[in-house]
Image 1 (cartoon, rainbow, N blue to C red):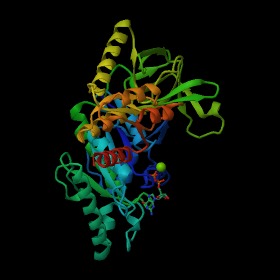
Image 2 (cartoon, helix red, strand yellow):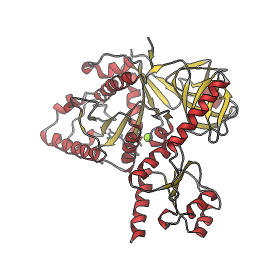
Image 3 (cartoon, helix red, strand yellow):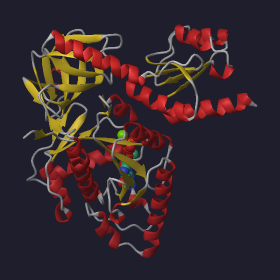
Image 4 (tube, rainbow, N blue to C red):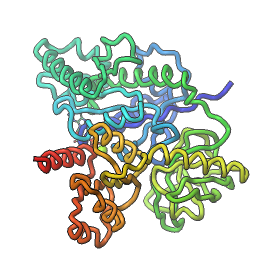
Length: 448
Ligand code: GDP
Ligand code: MG
């Protein structure tokens, strides 16, 4: 029988809605749940073993477990999520969409939902900060339903109204959603779990639903099985003192060993290199870089590690890699990567805007969104905006298409001057939705 691996869970949501606090709270439970097996820190991720999850869920636990735990991606936000790609979609198996229940949907929430939709990632909504609902009586770590039973009618109604608003917002994106305890089929309806990342209320149900979903959705798809070949995604490319250029990666399949040859999808071609070192963060954080990491001989999925290897210069965040053993393997990998790029980069329209983004994931999400609002695309690429992009955009006949959309990338020197000269309009934003809104608005105004 194949071994089930740890599902990867990404936490998404608008800034300040509580992503970091939620992960901290889950981590801190270790102090209260002393017997639970240790939480493991990874590069960019935290592994919570199933025994600890069970302890947090205590009385309400009612699922049969087949997974070893959950690996939460720490680097929160859409950037990390769109970086975390694997063939056929996002690397994260599941996601938590966190929304401040008092504030409701915000631009980054909308962005997160559209990304989840693009990648068809199952998710649970954590309606956070319920302790801020006027009149709310908190009890530490209580299951939501227990806490709920203790509230007065007025307070209950307040929360209900907020939940209805969330249901409405999700409906706009084509999702049917409901409070978790009113759902019969979790594969059809998105669960909303009211929680407080400060008091811990609702976290038991949140975790239990995540475990249930992980098992239901993913066992069927066999996406959680550890197979032979090591496969992973580059989270970040970083210069590390004394080590040179290193890659923080999430390994999602197989076992990777020091000395393995790996092929990485580079910007222009496949980069072949060999693993010189695999580093894990030390359990007790230390200040000096050299002692921050612990060198290991091998690592098994799912895990976050830092890789030391030569030739990492051209590597892009969001790229895939895998272990290769022969020229044949490299050839296959190259063909597969090429095919995937082709699937993403759309058939270039003759007329259309120029799109530049920071990662393949954000490129894919934006292409998807632009198609939906029927904006043609002439060129879609990962990378900073250069003068060639300006020339390409200026060659459009329709003035509405003489536009560059720059998402989370830089304008290289001279680009702005060149754009002014050729009458090319540049929209540069860090939030997908703001970018789309500004372009839409501009097009409306120009059409008049
Ligand atoms: P992030 O930007 O999504 O990571 O948000 P943070 O986790 O940094 O939280 C932003 C602020 O909201 C911090 O001041 C938190 O203390 C606060 N916060 C987060 N969750 C809760 C909650 O459940 N209740 C209350 N009252 N405050 C919260
Ligand atoms: Mg944060």
